[in-house]
Length: 346
Image 1 (cartoon, rainbow, N blue to C red):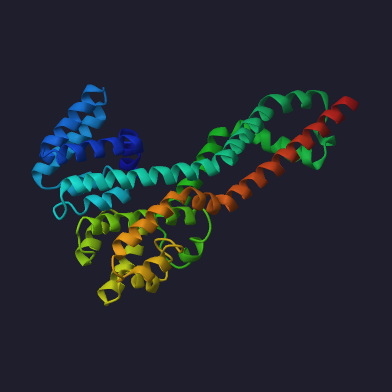
Image 2: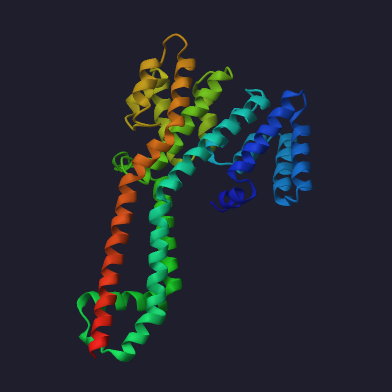
């Protein structure tokens, strides 16, 4: 996880897209991958991006040592790591161009998701700041002019909450950070009983959409590059995938090993992966003439509408957060007016 955080700082989405596309263009001109990585590292160094240059040189060294796919996979998100798992079976230029397209797709999807959640998150942060400020400045002043024992229930709750938050702010941040980390672990690592039902609601449904569409997009990139979607392909993809995606891919792989087609295997796995809206289409197109082209067109259109899909799947979580903020703010305002009124009569 630490490496992933560092990688996101050194190689954020927009930078990865530009770097991947630049390397793909250099390779298309006939340059070797080793030379292209050298130029990319030199470009980053000239731009003052020493860490980025160091990562690209690490990739170059790994290429010389025969460990390129494994090394690159540790510095990019799982969806792009799945692409590099095909190194050695697909031309490097095709891989980097495909990685750029996958990164672009995920960037758009994640941008849409964060836009959907921006308002409630900002309101929650504002509410926390309001409570912290009230506990340190507003409440102490009122306690000096009014007996807290005469305050109503709402005012008492507001007082206790704000005073505790002001006095234990670091503890509060630690608890919230711990809860967020636990949710992250559940989202990425939980694959057992109940996960299929959890995938129907946010944030689990959002993660399934992001990882699932990326998986299918990577498969289409392989197919368009002439790679047969077989046991070896899935094994290579799973090396770079997240634990959740690896489990879902493994289920599809088992059914394909039993003789089922790609789309039928998705349906038989019963996980709704890569996405419930995609599985029936993939199953219907699988095996038909030109299914790769037809499916590719469908996925492109689906990804183009992914902002609407993600917004709709974030709606319940969005609405719940807004409802909580509304009730807390309304209660706080009511309590503050009650306190002020009692202070005026004291």
